[in-house]
Length: 111
Image (cartoon, rainbow, N blue to C red; front, side):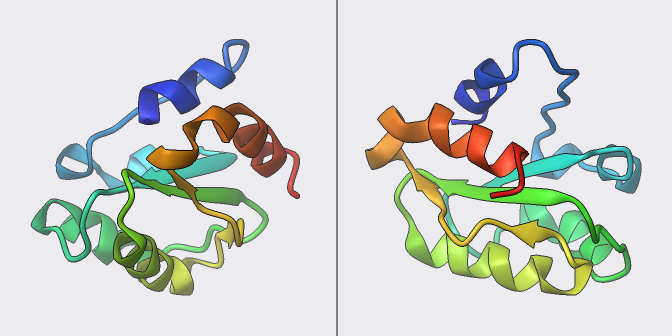
């Protein structure tokens, strides 16, 4: 799904990072963040979760996506809470991928 989201923003600079390879410097310059996982409490997200506890992403928009695991979305929302990232209330799941482009553009415009 991350590749599909990246395809929506063809005129923008995008960085796609696996959670296990994430470093704090990956998220600092981001204007918009799309975060996805297939299951909650993944050890691959340990560094990501640690960074989100001490970073301020106020004024930046974000969207969450999953392959169809609502519990993963709930967990991502929880770990993003302290960062002040303005998360869309609507998350994207693989079962609704036909609406992915519209969803991603809406998030990028702050809606």
